[in-house]
Length: 500
Image 1: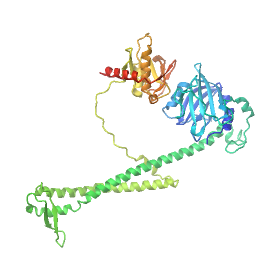
Image 2 (image 1 turned 180 degrees about the horizontal axis):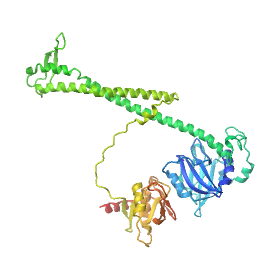
Image 3 (image 1 turned 90 degrees about the vertical axis):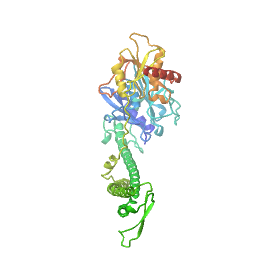
Image 4 (image 1 turned 30 degrees about the horizontal axis):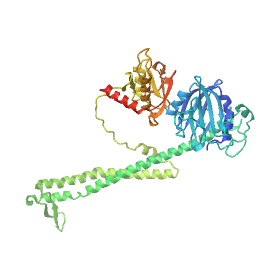
């Protein structure tokens, strides 16, 4: 369960004195609904963990940096752009509620991280100096650019109440209560150390996270097994249908041998012939259908060819059917074992054995020109990358130091370069055209509005070891705009002319 207001107050009393005046060195997002801030303060580095998981929303310090995905998710990129290098000015619990504000200063401008640890509606939001939301971890009640308003408090305090953190830490005494921290926590057992509450929280929630991760993994395995079982059942059904169809030709070798003895008796255009069945001691008469459009030899060949189908089906289809039936039986047993909380050794192999559909061959086409190419209303050239590789090539291969570089703020998107003559003045319409393209070719396109950052190419750097397309920007400016459909249509027309 999420932290209570009292637990939040206690953990803040423990960690805030060490965090205030510290600087954010790096932001990480180890889980889809949690972030970690690496904060350098007073000769040491602390890892502040903020979770907006509806079931385990919390805030505390971690003993070490957690494992992180190789590519930072969009919200993590926003945090790095907005918070890295920021100095923590203060931390407060808002209105004695489950809301925490981290007020910071970066490049002389205020920036705030709000952690609403409110269970089902938990969220993390980045606010600018005007209090407008510039990004959020989970889809919430705000859009980018909306002014942040805290949710209605269930307490009697109508306004935010600053917490005297140093005084709280001096007066804090752990109190035994249900689902909280034991009175012997500080200085004993797993709670010992400089930050005993954080240590206890990490231990307790790690057990829950591991249990939930195990349950999710088990559910994923079950879902994979059910999906594989469904495919296997369809394959069995198709093989059985093919086998049933081939079974009709089981006696066609005998029919062909009988027909061979009476080929001279078949008249032109005959539709059937009656022959004695020499393979039966009673010598009953058999009526053999014929194709009137074919010769006697052609009809004979048909009978033997259909018998060959039966033989091939027995050789090819039946073993495949038996293998599919055995696979289905194993899948059902594996599912039953998982339902009994057992983990059969075959599970890993079965999930990995799911066959992917064959790749379709693409038609060979002439290589396309690199980048999307547009012309601004003022006649300036604008280039847009179409993927990570092109973004890298455009920014660090083609763009000159005096060209203008643009990108959607806090969202995945294309690199955009506005080509400028050296020493030329930046024209407003060209800037708006380039910013419109940066917005259009990013995830902000869905909302139709957002913030675009821009800087001269000389202020764009690639971090050491970073993947293609990932950059850091200094001396950037920001422009908030709504998508202008008329402007975009004109730019699309210029793209057609550029490519012709």
